[in-house]
Figure 1 (cartoon, rainbow over the protein chains, first blue to last red):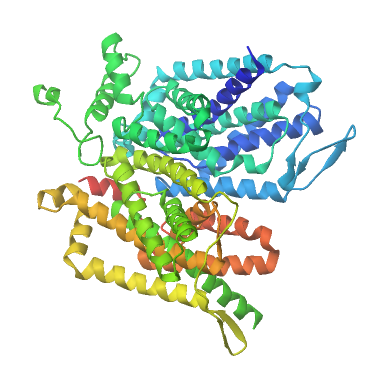
Figure 2 (tube, rainbow over the protein chains, first blue to last red):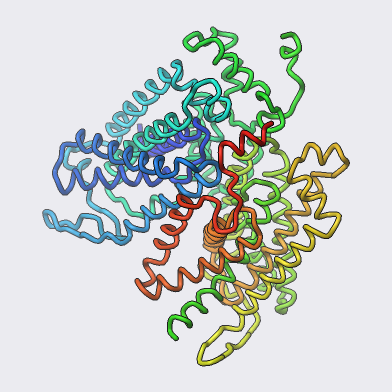
Length: 335
Length: 298
């Protein structure tokens, strides 16, 4: 495998962590423009731990996931009353505050004759873990893929449990969820915290791989891209965001010949894709249809399953506000 | 006296933010959707005007007309591609992400039209005014007046014309409006065209007082417009203008007190606090409560 291909794949895997964290927030029905902050927190914590405190890399990864998770929990607790656009803008503010305060932190250090440490806009350079341990790009790729695979497996297991089911119900219809005894705020806090942990872990690997990080890398564009990946991919299954990442980065790399016009093509393509699949490629409705064919979801109480299917197929109580308008569902009349 | 001068400078500078926030507020107040491509549609409008100006040569009036027409056309394109096909609750997220994708597209087209880092934007020359030892920039006073005229005109259109009634009806309940004979699709186009004309005017005024246009104008105007709108109150036109002026005022004072590098930090910090403590903004209606949402369904 060439180094070029390996580094592209590693970048894709790293961005997938961010896309998955945006996915976790979207599952509970919130839109976050601020996931890049947790990514950045992970990156900076790892850089500080490995370079300045000489911590072992496993500890650094855990610490950065923990710090990002705590930051996400803080954001979720502060914005408990907000939802929709308000939450989106609050998370944007949070992320921008983080990025702008990083620009003000200037603590340059000199270690072994090399400048390092957080230095405002110049960033944190010389994170030499990858060089000190003689790690090839391909090895790092397998490390990243192993972490991503573990995360995906965890998410797939979670998908079969009642937790994910209730979270999706909260995201689809907050009030309906409350009325069947699901606590929306609890699910919101837990999922936003989990998204912070995932993003922080990804950011930690990003810092190790890039060896140089700077505040400008964690701008609004990164977060909104991650959000776009999970929307294009769809919210039906954790594989959705990965498909989004693959479409974007894969497409950008394959139409490199048109490099000057690639954003023009890609932007239009995404808009058209969203017209055809408004809920993304792997949307909950599609997943339900596949599940109907294979085996019913038996791990949740029957009434929850019924509500979820109904909600996905045409909206509950008020068809005008939820679900897409379309042909009436014949099953409804048969019942 | 210095405090007064700083405040006045800030408020007058905020008039540019107010103009940007008005466009966002118009779209959000009517469609309940957020148009992320708004800032870059203004950038593309002015980029087209600059490009035409470099090739043919236009006077200030021609430049203004080309800017607002191009901005309105780009806005109609955004509406057709991102907002018209998405209806219902799931459409809110989908239209936002689609408008983000179109933002990327428009930014790329603009940077193709404006290959250099900065391009000169020829504008109107207006001198400064001095009253009681206070210096006021003429172009910023013009911005403020245009903002006030724009709100009055929008208010009159929304309250006193048949079109305004149709618009409010289709904002309130598109299904019912459709059943009663309103052409909801055409109303969407006209709303976006109005927002485009308004945005084109504000882009022209802001860029002509800056004297140059850069490809970063799209991101800048989106962020500043959003922040000003959220400060003032979502969906309220008066709130948008007050929010813009307040944002200018706060930025001027923090720049004066702590230096320019803390300006954005304080802006976002204040917005974050406002969102946590008073989520509706200054003038906004707090339609974020669960009980209100529950009430709407019945």
